[in-house]
Image (cartoon, rainbow, N blue to C red):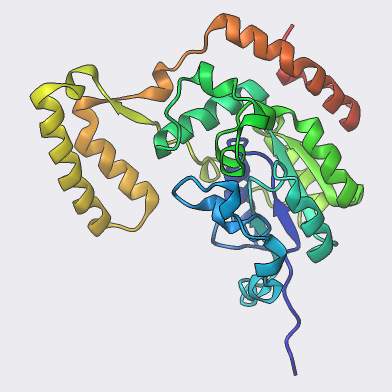
Length: 314
């Protein structure tokens, strides 16, 4: 007898740096839920876009020609309970919406959103840490969408990703309203138990089980950069060698991401400092972004039928 294909019961697909990993870790603690262990499983987005190197549009194959839904469902065949998947790019990548409608029409979607300016800054710093961003925040935030190729639109587009109403409107053309749950990150942090119960009701799982939010907190590792004295002359050469040697040691000692990050900090703290803690946004630019997002936020409030007090720019 052929076993039925396992299709995810729900998908966490908010926005990058909006708390999707935190929610993933929280729901993974629930006894009725089985989260797929690979976070940000990118089946519905062109795979070439996740290359470590920039891919030009001409190099991107047609998604439909290479997609294998059987291979997708095979990933979940050993999971029990209500299977969950996370992908923080699905909401933004509009081409995926019709694919979701076609292949997983009955799946539920939890969309978690964060105040747009804070989200943009966090994504920018994260891309710096990964080495994919090289520009200042002021220059990066003003990139024009029409000047970017698909790879850049996915990884280096910070401003337009915060126009949530545009993405949600397109998403709603393909996914039924009953299968969409929008969560505001600041609301989740402030009203933890209440919002989580609401999410449990949406997923039809036991709302009395409240996981530990401390175990859910994620992606808070600082982005460390060398202090000024370590970027020049003989000190730069010394620390270049030191980092190559210590990195070779670290990757051999552990495969755990958190352990590796902790080791890097311990071995390099004396000549590095946290870029996140140092980062400040120009007041004029911040005001410009507030004006830019205000109408989008208002439209989102109208769609949700409630005010988002945490995003008040007045």
